[in-house]
Length: 475
Image 1 (cartoon, one colour):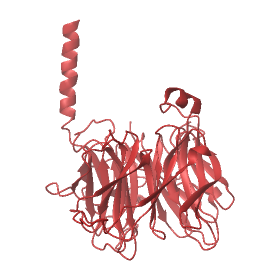
Image 2: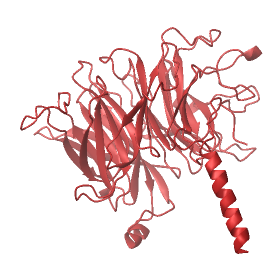
Image 3: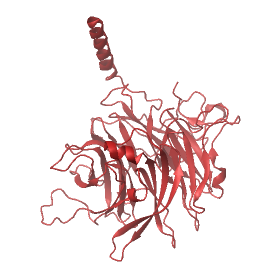
């Protein structure tokens, strides 16, 4: 029996060794964990029939480590437009799940996180080619990929796309571009999901590294905030503030507000005090309003004259008594919520935050996205619930959920796919398209939201009423 067990263990080890060197597929998604859109000014070269003008960037995380651990995740750029008769057009709705790719795509370290894009929309002052940034929790490195004029993503050349992160911190995760139009702010912020004891600071503390997008060769500046590893970030260029939400670190639900300084950090500056001081950080604990809340995603409202600036924050709700008894995050949720938070300023100019509304949603709240502005009206907000596979459309004009896309009445399966989590939004004027990644189904669905009638929002479907997908569904 012992010999049999030993042989089995050796066989499994050999299998794992083989898998660790297997290159990932570059023609499909697998565990898509993050999405982003970037403009293609000349239209998608590979889909002239449709004439699209967006490239959809999709990060496949290699979540189960079935491919090369060091470079088993992928970043693919695809034409998201709908396919047309004859097999022409874009990637949406192709019966065989084939992708219309823009460039060959790139590889990066496993457990790849959210993707952030520096382009004409997010960093006008930077100039030059657009770039996509993704961190790998496995390799603990930051990867940046140039994006071509037609939306192409290509492999790294000689490791040029790899940037080292702080050696003392673990699990780099969310990344965020923070640029001012005047060029003074041109930062990329990287957060970490775990950290050991560092210089006497305990685990479970939030850390951030700031890169200079104008000179990525510079040593990044790393700062410490407070308890609560960061799960998501949002930048407000009007005030030059970075907002971040903290994950579980005890009975707290921190919203971090960073007042950034109008300068570019220089690691060679030896002046005392330094010419470019670090950010001023305020922490607002939302746990006092929503007990048992673990904050997940954040998005800021559209700035409109006469309306307060809001932060929309998704939260998973756990059993507070269980957490207090075990001092650990319960393995299950008991609810989900969308928090509508008013962002204000004290007389002294310090930022304040007040929860205006708590909106119940499904289990397993994911990222949150705000749709394009509706002049004179409140925002439309979309948030998925990965536990039940639903999508919620919240209308801040009526302060209520106006549409839920949930379960197919015939099949009983989630219409948006299993475990929807990440999203990207395309502005189509009178309507918005929301691309939704299904982590467990390996596909991307598209939610069409009429801006004047959000209650009629629905997934794009084929003539038979079946939701259209981008990518090949997992079998």
